[in-house]
Image (cartoon, rainbow, N blue to C red; front, side, top):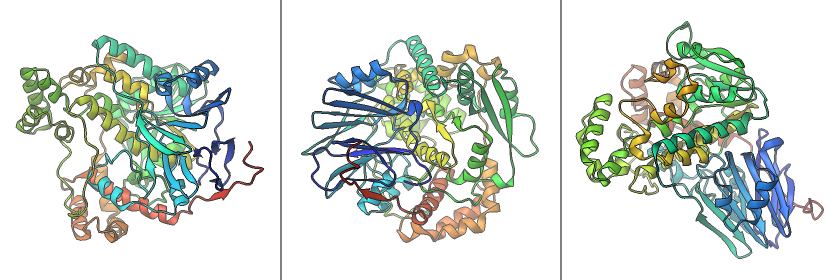
Length: 560
């Protein structure tokens, strides 16, 4: 692993061959092998042990000695740790059996691969790819370009598997198996969900700021502002509001000024031409294309303006402003008039016809409703760029979970980018306990066409200024995207004949035509364009970066 990345992993118990660990790893257990790399100080690693049993919680958690003891002895490890605040994975070794839990959202990923000496698992896919001798997976890239909600069990590297969120990897001397440990909670009374969300999100912030260390936040929309208010309860907060050069009023700036807290320091971050989308900047190698690949020049500069621990509001839109999948639930419950009314309101806000929404709702086609407003397939993708996706159950809870997991997976690469810049990036809305809380509200109560993020406002409105509670929109920087394309057009055109074209996944001529149209200000399918740009520069970054190195353990190093 490189760039000072933090990671952990281990091997199959009872292995008879040579054991290997990443260069610089610290062996924590010898049989079964478990190691860590990088700085795991403080709250990021919790260890427990009993008679012939060991447990470790890796990631952000509040697990204490009593919690670890209960989890160590629990017949169902998933049930024992469910509800803990934070974002974490768990590894437990008992009597020759290793159980590794991936969190329910996927904030702390777990990957695994088979080697000549047994199964090896790690929190970093690129490290396992170096061990297996494989590179990026063209089939995964094809799915990613069509729809960023890629198959959960695959990584971006060939022959490196991913433990899907909410699943466990079980290793024994006989091999490996993957099975689910998490399922969506049953919905209940709305006010119960409101109270549960307040507890869960407060815990998600507390576990990251409870020691009183200063943190920074994005002080912008309602999601990030809520995190700022909660973080200020536990220590000093620097709230950073980005704004275009020369703009000193309006939008997020005015909302930020209305928030006054004793331990809050407001700071503005002026966006100049150096921060335009697609500005050329060296991208560190990550486990998959980062969400902010096109914004790395701005993202890295904004991180530098903050503090070593930074909280973002990523994930809030997925939880509190979801696609209209609840229409299928309304039909399933016989609430046809409510479904028709909501479809009409949702369509009017987006200036589209409600007929396709009603048709999909009556067919209970949740996948189609989830894709509402996503736009048509990008014309530059070749016919062979097939999209293989996991099936989505016919309910809104599964669609919301799927959406948040996709967001968390993309944001994890941003966390790697931030780590390369020396910043610990956190996304509290991606915590499993927060997802559980949101899912306890019925789907038609989680969002609204007439109220902005009602569940979040009802849970935290008393902590926010009146102006924030009444907010109905969020800031947008779409104009800067067109400007960025114009400013960087030669650079972008060079990317058209790159790795993706060589793999036969895109048609360079059609992509160049789309870039020229975007430079002229034409309507652009930005989501698809950003996916192809991010994938291309990610492939370049992975190809240019030194591969993580592994070393064979000597007998002396096998004993911690």
